[in-house]
Length: 127
Image (tube, rainbow, N blue to C red):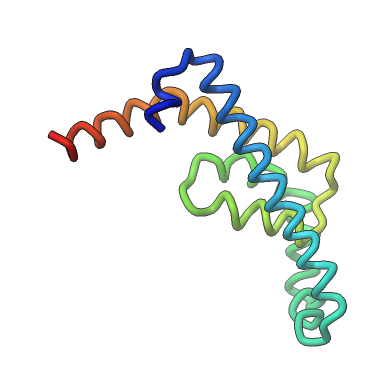
């Protein structure tokens, strides 16, 4: 984080944006793979094909797009929401714009307030 802090904002933002886009998209595709693999396992298929999951897929496909960029304002939910979007087969045409907005939000936060907060904590620990 110290190396990122010392970079010009545009470069720090660009690096952080690429990192989070790669991570979020990899998580989405892992969710899709888990869904595909679950169809081959009777036990997992029952969990992925139940009424509740069907309803969740419908909600995620219709309304859940907003959950993707908003998850980038949280700690701990980003991975779960991106994985769920993949597992629930959110259409890529909806997911990519949503994850791009979320990644812009995340990179902006971490390239500004995140590096300042890290510096304050780091200096307090090492004082």
